[in-house]
Image (tube, rainbow, N blue to C red; front, side, top):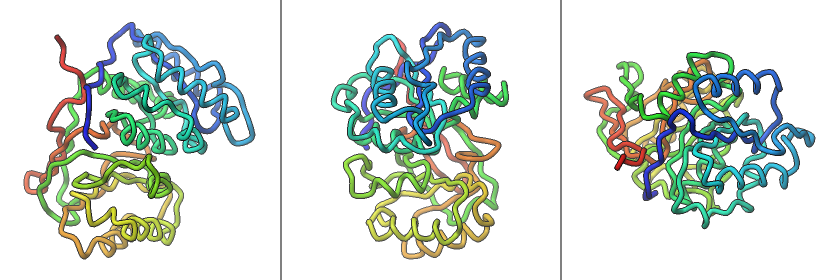
Length: 303
């Protein structure tokens, strides 16, 4: 999970590509999100095929792959924001031009099904990407959009204070954060799109999954030798799943043989709050100081 060149900050006037690599979306929510970006001074460029429908997908695989590849490769585009998750991003991985992306990082934002793309870009292009709201998630609240833009422009710090009840197992560790949606992440085990988890702080979240299915996914991580290699586990939102105490108890059973720190209740993933966090950037988790904080900016240093 070696990180390469820093990501350019998102400045007013920057061109932002809006792409739909997964499911279709409501036109009204798209328009509200695009309006918020334009109002903040950004040039919005919608993917050519973004408004298509193909069953439960936002266009055919070829449509979605074209828009995403164009946005990632176009030097005039400084940020790529995914419009919605849902399902379909994983179907694009085999066609993406990862080798052409290794020396040209740019902002890439999304969550949920977009986890497939976060992991692929980390593993095969060495990119730092940003786990946070998709466009339709930003569109509901102007303050949420502003918070996202503050993060992507380098005006916000990536720092979270922990409450005592969030600490399931104490410890102090440094390492890169990676992960995202647990259901998506486990589907990439055994593929080249899965980053090396050694020493990493694994961030996981999910939505509408029964407790036994979350249990099965955690067991999969154990059997695939992911859990023994980790530096920590960071639990985000588990929206419309089981009770938080049940989820935490189950996860602690799976990691009982290891001694890395585990914290819960972090504001990442599905739910009312979904903070931006750079995946691939080095973080410090210190439960004595009760802090999760970035150690090095993900952005390119200005000349």
